[in-house]
Image (cartoon, rainbow, N blue to C red; front, side):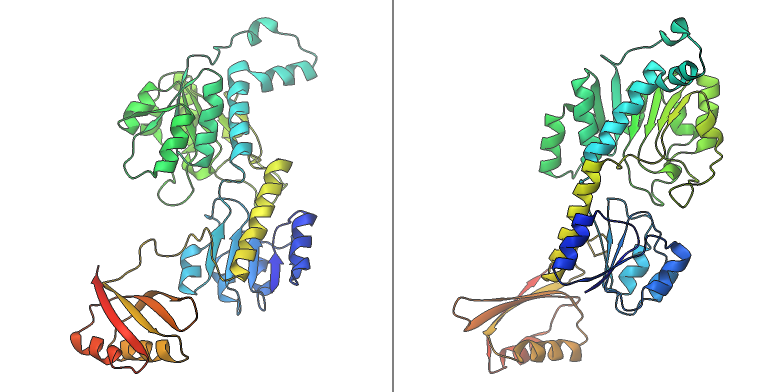
Length: 401
């Protein structure tokens, strides 16, 4: 396969792909505007921070898989990729520990004034009295918004500091998540308002996108106690920056931030931000996942995702239908002969029954197989009889959705 790396991967990961026979093209110089011209002939695209726009995807002729070397996929036009039949996969959870570590680092830095104290020492100033004014973290309450891998990892580390960790009780969380959160010491409150009012510290671990853009607005911040700390290591556009500045100036809120709304599009550049300059902010340069440990884990996960695709499996795909659009499921036991399924699909096509998902499994001995086909409508008795009439079909059954 031809694989384009729009952002760099460690040499060991690249060597794995080359050893598998792939044609790997490293193009870390590309930006969103130049990406499209590089896509013709490429089957797999790997990105970290490079934006993948609809216009770029439209220039691809063989692209089948986009892998985000990380968790968030808000920089990829997943909707357009879905329209073009291109899988978009991510590598979730591999950088969770690194982001959780930075979250705790920001919290400690805010509480102990580490950034300002360091700046004064470098400037030759000694002010022990001013920098002795710290609250301490033991016994504080941390409200986590976004109880995924990073949120749970942050909870575990906060609990080790003697911090009480809370999250909103949401129905439908998988049992595995509930178990991990329980072991991390998380307890639950009924709603977001209760969490905000009860938390000395609020930490954001939500994905980017329309559903979370501007979530932390003036009304949100007004529900936090005076002097509370806001931590954001998720996405910059989650926070209304003007509202946060106002809350810091009028109510003494403080913030530890790794992300901003208008970050430079490249790894370095000029950056002018009133929020980043504010004296109540401790900040870093969107480096939450940027440890050697995390980058290696993400790289390994990226290559594993490509290897899975090579073998016919698609893992961690974010732009597939969560539930197949089906009205009925056909179970067709048939002789394992060429052309049987083609004949069945031709019957469904002639009856305007669209297939949403399909699988075919062969029994031991390779004499018979069973096809499971989800269809968008309920097949009539006539259709079923036509399928059953095929000389190599053993039996047909239908289950309604």
